[in-house]
Image (tube, rainbow, N blue to C red):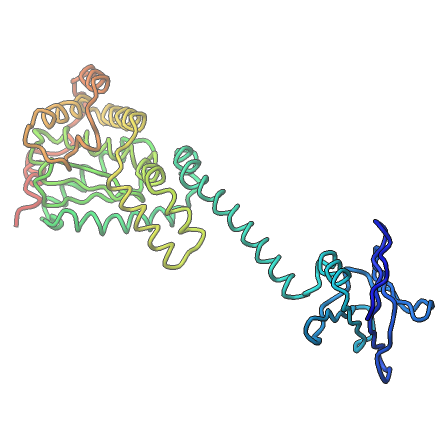
Length: 366
């Protein structure tokens, strides 16, 4: 095969061997590359192949054998001229057909995946925590219940004393909860339990589970103080604050898990549960929960300062644990001033009788 002079900046020409489908043997052809690949035999036009239709075909070494999608099935052309062969490889983007298409598809998928990861990372590590307050109402109740159930399991592991189940104490607690729910003025799906632990704490989990710890009940001097703490936790439940805290601290894992599902979803719910146990509420959430507690106690006709009284006493307890109530509910100067200024008068009936109060204080006794 010999090569003719290419037309400068216009075309590349060369000789080649071409087998047309049904022919007995290949024949010599002149090949010209412009916007397509044209074939001539003794000056007569034979065919033209669009560059996008040209594919590589199996052939001898050091020779470029090509075919065309629009040509006869067994037709091919061999290009031995390196200049023309290089031009074909450079300009025929799909020369390697499926291999090249798959390679380009992989690059496109990789680019899309990278973009998706970046967007998702920005969403779950920056956007979701920043808009947790707005995002929380969009979380289905079933998901919040699942997070709460996982947090409940972890909470019982953290506080190993077990649940307090004295029948008289549980009856007194149920009465106190019912009185507060009736005074709250809003529907409250709460389930209150007591754990036998000397830690002075109370906390609400996503989904409505509320825990009182024995240490806090023993520190209380009246049913009103326990009621103030419970009403405060009910405020967190009403505002879904524990879910908001979980989204701020564990929003990344939760968002990814809800998208991917399966084991990742279960792990994400567990991570969000841990976050709900360890995350402190914002000052705004604490203020709103205080206001909810004060309004509830007022409607029940009980002293609204009771919550401030027990918080002040816990704050002065130098032996309080890092897991106590103040870790999650710090008594800032502004909060202390608001609680101390609440009126102390009681206008309604006691929330518990003297006997019920004794039963509640002994709820963890055998």
